[in-house]
Length: 243
Image (cartoon, rainbow, N blue to C red; front, side, top):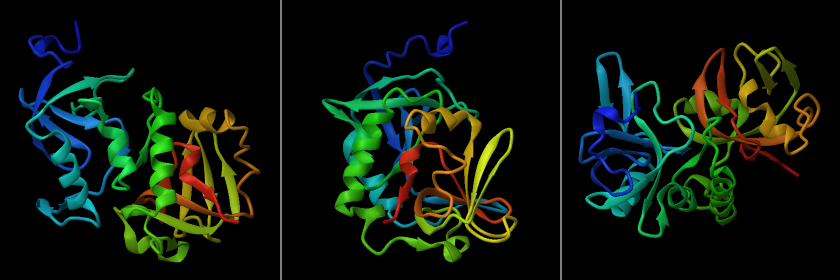
């Protein structure tokens, strides 16, 4: 059975966007929700004990506005990768409107960060270049002075941010490599690289056990809580060596 059999009347080469939810998620005219592949933007809503409430993170509204200007009410072309839906039943897609690649535009404007998920990495090199362009220009999420020292990472849970610190210890397990920035991995900041993404580092000849150990780095991504604050690193471009 085709993945899209229940929506066989929909032509994803030309489908209208009904509504923009935020910087990386849209609703189509057939009410199908779509999540852009390869990027993550700040959230406008936060989960609470009773549901969701409006509490926009820094640059969340700016990201939503750019996305809305690009696609809302317009006919877009969606392109898929190997995995076409996520666990929330959202379509995972690259979005194009005219000659603009929307996923790339969000990164170029500094209103998204790279969020790769193997095996959906068809355009990863293009997305990385767009993020580097914004980082070098100091746009929005990359504005000068926005880097968070490692000991303050826990104050920014749920935010897209860049954390700077020295990698004190590297631990490898069967499933992941952990870059530990403090003496106690149970409470201090860590960067986590899961096995699915090892090959992206191998392709750049980065030895995860040795390359970062003892060095000061900047790690960019979503700060989560798991035995202390952490960022899950899905691509080498998320870790920047500090001279």
